[in-house]
View 1: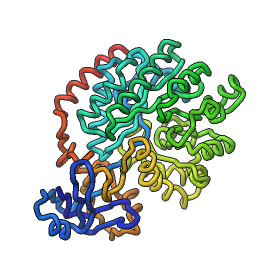
View 2: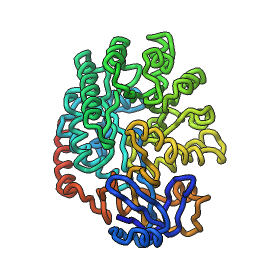
View 3: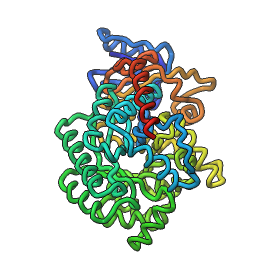
Length: 440
């Protein structure tokens, strides 16, 4: 089919923009991108999807979120959360201990459906449900397959709920990684999830490393999000967090170090030397009042920094805007943050996700995955190949998304989810979440 008759942003530096363009999709891949009229003449037998002047661009990529937190929306636990450690203890660890597989499934339905509606085609998730670990990743994976979302999943291995839970977390990660490897597709991948250094013993880190031998997969772990992570690491292990993780072989170009708010210069040097990817989550850092990640410094050093949401939102356009503003504000320099925000989402996320999924994502060009969105964005100023970043950061929103295609399949058309009965699913979700709230 040819999706066309609209402005096309490709993020391909050789052909970044077509005023009236189209995308030829064959199966799960893009075969050609170009002028809409020329494509119609070259391929007269192709089905035409006329977007009537809407914007056509690659789907957005969310490099870090927590599907399990979905049922916290609207919840009031009435417990104090004066600092980050209390936020964990009195909110997230209170909730995740009570999650069942049914809760996990409907959290996934809701989060992934909303992601589709906001133009997110690839989601990298970090799950926790310490008393229902077994099959939790497979449950989320089933929901992702049903909805048609490209997803990387992992389980938050931790010692905070005892040795048995830690070992079960290791098993769930390894079994899911192997299952995805056996499947061989590019839609579902596994990583090895870990909570954070301060909830992981040396023994658990060693077991994880041992089980990961030969799997050629990466780790997904929170790093120096709050200052306590560093304080406790220095107290208990005589070194800082990144130094400790490097000693266990956790850091590599396949791994995701989330946040790195309090990483010092030596730790940043280690992240650089190991080619480890850092994922920035601006709204979460602001909301938890943990500080500002040194994004400008890291990117200036050549560290690959991607962008996520940490479940604070499912709208990557929103995270993109806030990432720009936060860096300008924190550094008291309005000239910084803009290009860093653009590069995180539209260059680095594409590269990092491409390595995880073994596919070309986040770009419209020949042989890339057909992950495509259309938006009701009618620019009030000129749009061309030189000013696309300004239009995306300051003019676009996930709520403008009209159609979402993933892997060559429309999973949303004219703002209607095509893969599940969303109304029925959301009604069931409200029942399931109400039961969780009663347990809390």
